[in-house]
Image 1 (cartoon, helix red, strand yellow):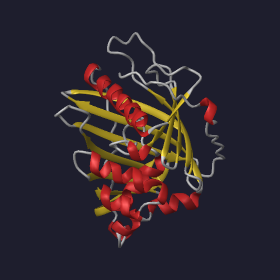
Image 2 (cartoon, rainbow, N blue to C red; image 1 turned 90 degrees about the vertical axis):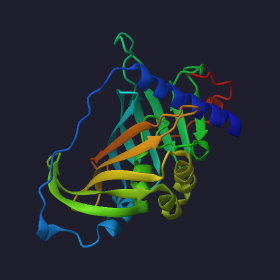
Image 3 (spheres, rainbow, N blue to C red; image 1 turned 30 degrees about the vertical axis):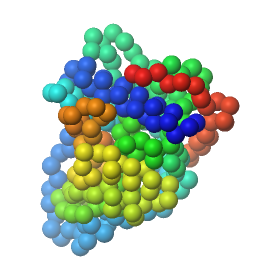
Length: 281
């Protein structure tokens, strides 16, 4: 697929998601409880610990993942949810992403199947005039957000690699998450710095996001288990879509669990990838 076609598709996807934000009513947001500070367990180097978090996931091998993306603009809010598997060594993942109902609550959207690969996003059932049996392939480095927002779910490994750009971090304390004791950190990452330190497959995508977002500064909250694996990470992005002057506030949350789960992701064959015109949404 030509670069112009990929850019058109990426614009169509983002426009569709943001249009949903403008049209939908407010959706509820879930927050984490306050963590009790444990001075004796305070890590000596929070910044270094978080910059290594992506490498710790590679050592873990794989996991299941749940994602949610809350988008807000003009006083309205919508949440997009996803669930699937991810192989951190191969950097391959599969998610089923569910869009919210139409404002009237009468229209159900088919789940979007997304396959995540180094430098590429494959989507099926996204609409926009693409036949139901075809995939669309997008080069993530051509997207102005590097696919941190476009697909309605942040690639779990990309979410971890954002932490490679950690500038400041504070240890908040310990809490429990799904029955597991975790350490809670809060800080700010820089996307340009993350791109410079990221894996080869993620460098172009994070570099594009550093240039495309309203700001390269990304506030975050992250929870690590005793092995240093990310159990939950929440980023807050500021994204300007197309000709809109108002920035869209995006909060992306990724939950990781069941580490070591077998993952078998098979990317589509060339004959199954759509090469026709993408309708603007």
